[in-house]
Image (cartoon, rainbow, N blue to C red):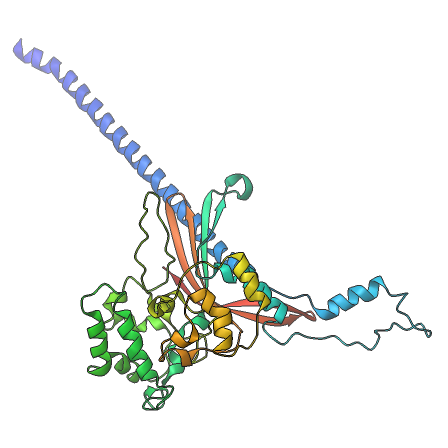
Length: 390
């Protein structure tokens, strides 16, 4: 009898085991389903964020594509509207001999003034664009920051790779070795490493680390970030690309300003000098310049007093001293000779963030502004010279 009872009870055990197995399988499938759903959402947001980041680059190009209407187009429109009144006694149009003109300058005076009024106030600052699914088919945020490479130090222009020394080295004026010595000293108070100023000075004067890196090359630099894997430059590992200061919600204290490697140095400007119109934020901080936002009123005043070619000290004190808070006579002697006198930005940098959901994609691009002739019309185009995912 006992053996018979034991044999009948196994069904209950098997039922419990079967139910437990079903529960385990259901739990596993549910867990996998939730994970897959979350993963799919993140992957979809990532692709959307990439698309928004690229869109930010296009927005920046659109803002920089300032183009004055062609004179021949204006003349043609006026001639068409007044053709009968402008015909002479022989029935020929008065402007019959007028030939088509082409714009050769990268910036005309009108374009330069429009740039100063509309783009100059937002240089090196965040611009934010919020998108909604109702209008754009996607909920997200695009943030862009436009800068100019003409406001940085071009390493390929200040070092002579044939003679293996800095341009002007040993001369009384234009000695870039002395310039870098002063510059690196000033960096010390911004980079969070003890006795950094002393270390940088040692690399220049004793170990000559910075100079050795340049001397060891057989050709020109292909990227300013080449320095960052060298000993002594670890301090800039997390300060490569410039990021505007942003006040976070609930935080009243303004974050401490930093300096960024690619915001000080470039290989794209093609000039030894720095444009006073576009001095980078990192160099402003090193020089002790003000970083106040240029409002519309100041921008319009700058545009009104605009000169394609400025002279110092007069134009500095009139145009730039009110912005930077420093008169020409108070500029560091090692920096003042580097100021360029001509306006003509050609190469820009764009920092673009695209955010969809909780995912943010970041890009940093170097773009060159060009004027080209297409179908007998002068148009503004852009060429991407360098592209980084950050």
